Image (cartoon, rainbow, N blue to C red; front, side, top):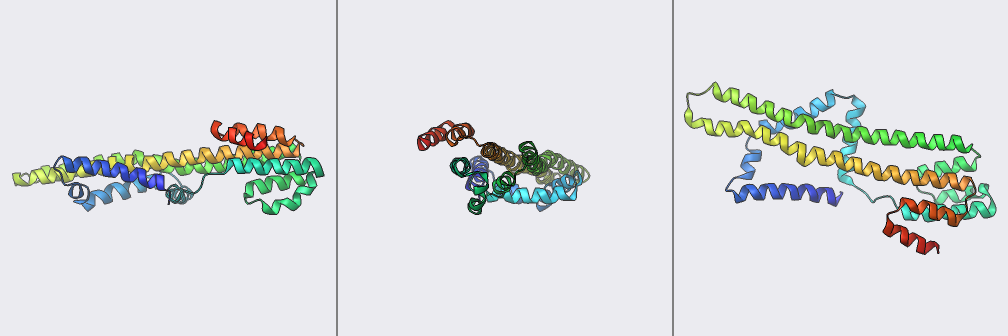
Length: 261
């Protein structure tokens, strides 16, 4: 599980529940007192989101949700630069074909596939087009996953308001018992609360998390593309290290330059 995502959501929840408790409210009763409100907003918003897309969009969205909460280690850009520089040294010293025996140690399938194409003598322009196409398709899949929860964040408040309107209609049709109006009104507004809650505590953070993770992975793959093409072109290992270090944050860049030196 991604500790930062879980911790962020829990902090937001604890802050909300704490503020309600300090005001003398019953947070558990307010949030979970009416299961029908939860069902209406949660299932309704996901249903409308699914209806606005396709079945693959729904499957991709569920996979993206798991990815957002599962997390995982970020790409090791510095380690990949070191690996690429090592490959550049081998290719420059012994020839590009000698890299084939070293590809077994490459764990990243994208990098391995690109290097194999370079070793096989693929035209540099065609190689770049192929890698860029794969990169753009990956980014498109990521955008669809993030958009799924971005759309859900838009539908959730609308279902919350719809639930409140339904509750008010029911309340106004039963005015014979004035003492029941207060509790009925509270239940009616609980759907609005759930709409705001799901949109801003769950759906939007997940969507933004997926966008950020995608941006990190795209930048990492761009680094690999540049390294693969430079190795194919016979780039000087030291020059390649300096070139690829531009993809690193300044602090990591300094460490990389010191290692190269």
